[in-house]
Image 1 (cartoon, helix red, strand yellow):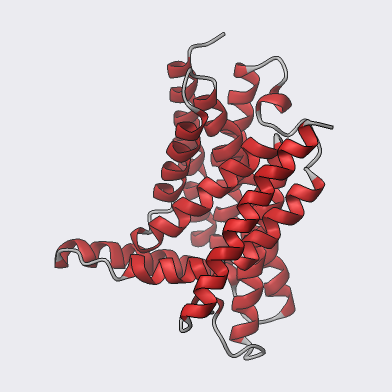
Image 2 (tube, helix red, strand yellow):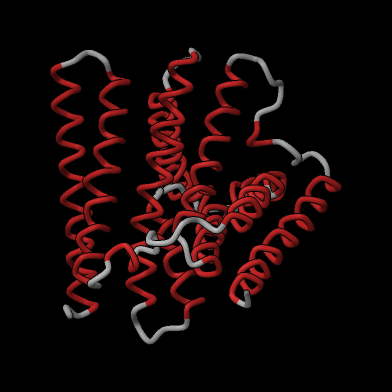
Length: 279
């Protein structure tokens, strides 16, 4: 078997190559077509396929005679675990929003703050363009790209391949989960959302570890992203008055209840795995 170092190097090289290819494709389409939104969407789809799915597939083939087993996609999602994971994410919204506010309040030197603020602005602008307008078609496309495709591809890349590579080492599994979560959060290049995204990545990592199926984390990730897309769409159309990103942050009671329910959900998710293993 190829060594861990060589597999990880190839994994990262394929990611860089795929990202470059996706960027070049978006650049070409942007010059040929005047539709900037289409170019951003095609870039996102290309990124998912070439930079995330392809490296994960190649590493899985090189790492095991059963690539699906290496990526943890061989077995169906854990039914009760999936329900618990999705419900936990919903219950965690006020808690996560409060952590986002705390993360945004961190004081940095002015030059560094401006640098990260510019990165946040560019990322937000790209996401807004990807989601498009407020039509039903825009909602469907947004859920397909940001919700479904991003959820599947990122889980294959981070929790399937990268976490799987770290787990193949004589390393504490908790260390593998948190290292992957740190890289997952850093990849998004959004400092003011680093901590909540780190916690989200760790949650998905433990979901795979406890349930034994990447599909459970994929479904939870897709549900999380799709809820955000749908909430933003509803806010844009003034169907709901409150932005989901600020929901619950004005009430310590909401945050406390969210913390308790999130903790209970994580405990149940872990316990459900032990119960299934004993059957």
